[in-house]
Length: 342
Image (cartoon, rainbow, N blue to C red; front, side, top):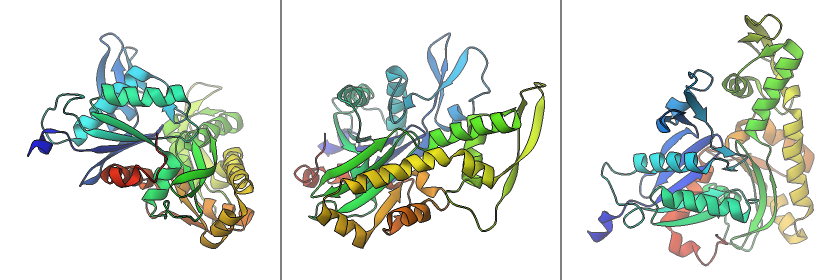
């Protein structure tokens, strides 16, 4: 009975694009955009998550929609704290708890290339949001756990987690990362490249949400058997008036090519630095793609062609890190001695 006074343990996949919350005993209960709308006159939160994202590009001058994380780390501490507090409370039972003393234990995944200052900011934001205890786990480890890889065994497991702000590639053995590459190029960079390409080639300005939708609908890492096209609307740079143009999947593939090449290079670099015994395990077992970026059409096939190793997309790539972080917090005592957590 006494344990019920505390908030239920929570795992948070605090992403640049989306935040997922996993509650102990329930699984993933929340998936919302990492966006907060603030009234600049009152400094009050107007909306968080889905509601705030719908306001991007549509707000009056006194309201601004903010994405408080950049490249996988906190760029605006105060807004991140407000967002975390909102999500943690929303995921808890409908009762109030006293922050810190009665709040939940919270596990948050962080990029493997995070700095000490960035790591401290994550912990402080969680504690300010009401966490009783805060743990952090590196994203590749969380993704590997979520994908069901044997991270605690003396064998090589390889994972590439491609999110909104970062792409994390790692080879894991005995509960720790042996070799890794962490680059701040991922889904958001692709969206920016699409918007830049359309502005340059079609003299049309589009918003980030339109660019993201084009990536989802038309994006691919290799030529498609049947190329596709879509009509989009934006603002004509020359006349300043609304305008529609047709965009093809070939154009989207060309526009995101540099980001795809950077992710591919991170995979090759990680493999190149992997000890021979573990590299042999990876050759036999293959690697797992996780994160929203794993859904890019034919990315697995392109990496397979370049590396010669089997490449598998996780069963639920978007949920993978959240599920892994959730399993970590549910079995925290079992993981303390095996995982190199922070």
